[in-house]
Length: 406
Ligand SMILES: Cc1ncc(COP(=O)(O)O)c(C=O)c1O
Image 1 (cartoon, helix red, strand yellow):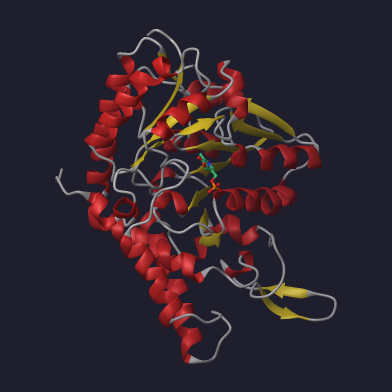
Image 2 (image 1 turned 180 degrees about the vertical axis):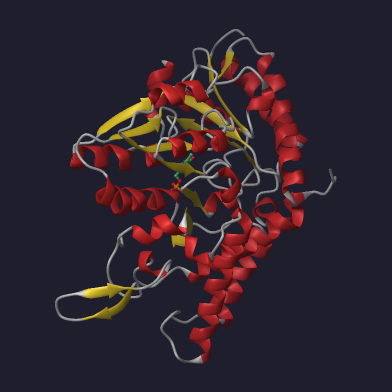
């Protein structure tokens, strides 16, 4: 593991010299190379892509499609036809629910959703169930955040058409055994939707090895700009799915009454696309590849263990999920006895430390755990020991600053 100071690569840390940014699960900060790639695109290559017959438009098209190829390679997809650009993970998941869902789900079918899902991987299925008359069911984990193959097998029935689960929960930070789950689902004829929003930025993801049918993630949690996301889908599945949004770019031929649609992946990319975002995503992927996931996960896991150890020493701090540090990959959600998580976050903010507080868009999980809300610290590879030191020093003072004796 190198001793390189990665913060030098991110201008925000020069702008705010003492920023301790521990809200990386919400969004990540942007490396200089990403900011510069987006700026260069808008300075030198901007035009409406995919439809132009002039040089600049061709450049924009190349920039966009090269980004798609970079994403394909990054997640090990077979073909660029399997990579659809969206706005974010939320839009990718909604696309599945509207397109695949409306074509395949009927009254009497079952949709199985993990209880720890982010609202973005729950509400599309809730709505789909309500509109089609399908039944929405939940797979529960234990209090440590563990899902088992046995529980999944027991929950699946011949009517279960879909299973939706995050590879890494944004509350627990635990890696779910997606490969095993996808295999179980495949044997049952159940489509597996994997929410990769918290895994793709932090751990190598190979969609063919995992065997998932569909995978969603956001660029902005992956050091890329906001407004660009990805939907991966197995080609045979995407091929059969109807378009989600209709309009320019996604058509082949249009008459007054009807239209035929473009080939994959363009049939899912209606309207003018976000080339700048895609260019930024490609730059982010190149940057991540230049560091390597061995280094990224080693750094994040080491810092997680350090924070976990310090937090475990404080009797009034309760960590949500696993009691083992190595089952929290860069995410530790917690409560402080007697102090509302918003007050916890306010104390941290006063010390220049950014953490998240609230329900983290996972209210059913908080209800399941019997916790109103929580605070969360989440890491990226550019965090370092001094961030953890400052975090624990402030954590030790929270109760005192809220008027408690100890
Ligand atoms: C696990 C998970 N899924 C989905 C999302 C939604 O991501 P976005 O808001 O970028 O669509 C998030 C965001 O926090 C998340 O943590």
